[in-house]
Length: 91
Image 1 (cartoon, one colour):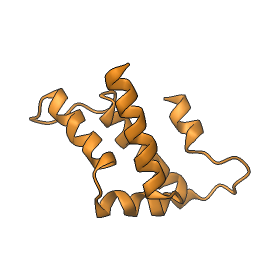
Image 2 (cartoon, rainbow, N blue to C red):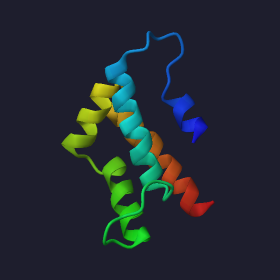
Image 3 (cartoon, one colour):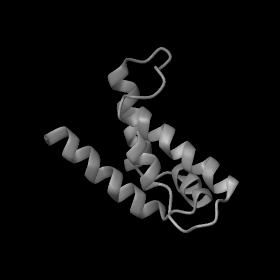
Image 4 (cartoon, rainbow, N blue to C red):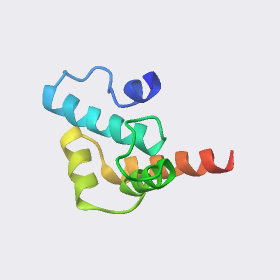
């Protein structure tokens, strides 16, 4: 988890509480996608993590907005998340 926090913290950048909030939203979403977050309600763990991964990998307005609020390029974050999920599945 610590690596994700470091990856989402751009060094030398002034700490903006709003950006920090939205970066934490991304961290929690990533934990969910990796099956390390909160337990799902009424969904199997597999279905919940699959749904969470799709939020990262399939274009959607909510993901784009969260990335924008966090100060990130949503296409870049999507690409990196997709690469990571592929490596994890095959690795």
